[in-house]
Image 1 (cartoon, one colour):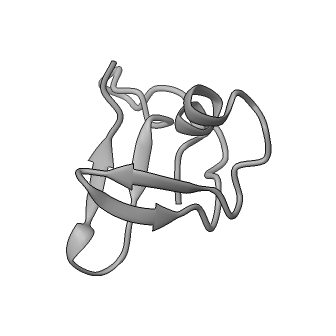
Image 2 (tube, rainbow, N blue to C red):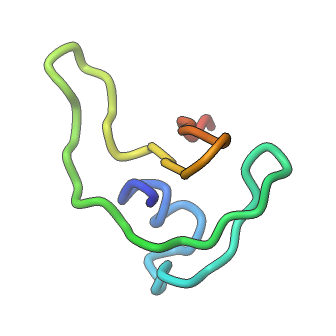
Length: 63
């Protein structure tokens, strides 16, 4: 699962489902794009997240 901002930055608003990406050298297939949330109560963006399964956990897109 990837955040809406990740989808925008990596796939330029194209269909992200089924696309492949590498995160820390580990291959992933996009199985969903999270609905846009904006900032949380402390001002941290919530749409630049990547969530994986198993040992990979989650990450935040930097840049």
